Length: 244
Image (tube, rainbow, N blue to C red):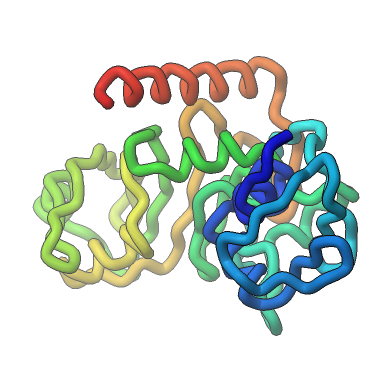
């Protein structure tokens, strides 16, 4: 195998995303042949070099894993963050996995975790506009006009959010379907129209549904779920290649 950048190897091996890999390199978490590496752009040969992450050897071709977790509030969507409870601590398996996408600390619900770096990159890329469905509860009753404003788009940092699908559930709660994932997007959108989000729970990502999974529990994706998800990612990649 030819030499590749260290952060790309970490992603391919399922340790973390490339961007997270860069942070781990700068933090001194990676050793190559016993030497701590802190220089971005370092290249390695996975067939010859011994790569360690936090003192543990990293295999170049792990068995791909795909997991659905019902994230509780109070956990951060990260593989490593000092003095915080992290979502990966909820999944008691020996393999290294990392979250796909994010849910902020206060939010809860469906989170995908995997060691498939390719899937992580595709799902995290803005061009893969898969649906994400959230159950939202605000602090006071919300008017129909405000729901229409959320559906039509809200200006955040000078950029208008994409149109969304919004369906009322009760006086204070509604379902919101997005095809983008900007930082704390729903909370910020609600704040722009004078509402405070009390509870935010993601119940679907692409074809994966939270279902009856209890808070803090996890499960492996079924073969059917995995096949549909991977096929959708492959189709989207082909479309992007045709446009390039």
